[in-house]
Amino acid sequence: DMARIGYMMLREGNWNGTQVVSKAWVKRISSLVTPLEEMNPERIRDNEFGYGYMWWIWDGPEAEGPYKGAYTARGAWGQYITVLPALDMVVAHKTKSTYRRRTSWEMYEGILERIIDARLP
View (tube, rainbow, N blue to C red):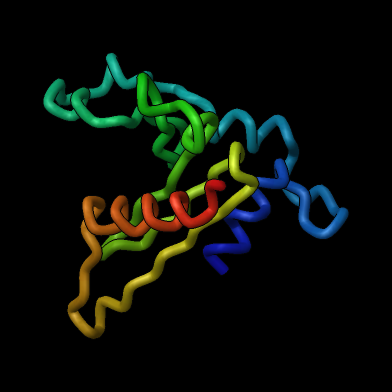
């Protein structure tokens, strides 16, 4: 289901030929509302994200190549949905808290980098 949400976002709100969410709303929620340089507290300004509406948006120098236009949802215990329009790709990652497993952003970022590297020529 997480991958389906990401795929619907990647397709600008369209699912199998049916517009289930307006293109304008998808664009709005996946666009910068708070740019990286305005993030608070200031200590989080040294990462690669600004913020949209419930989506973290790659911003600044990191928002190039495969991360151009990319955004990610980050949930409890290491649940992630990453949309990479430049690669026409969605990555969904799920953990199960019952097993007391957690996937940090750093761990997920490593997984994501490997997936991107495997996808690039």
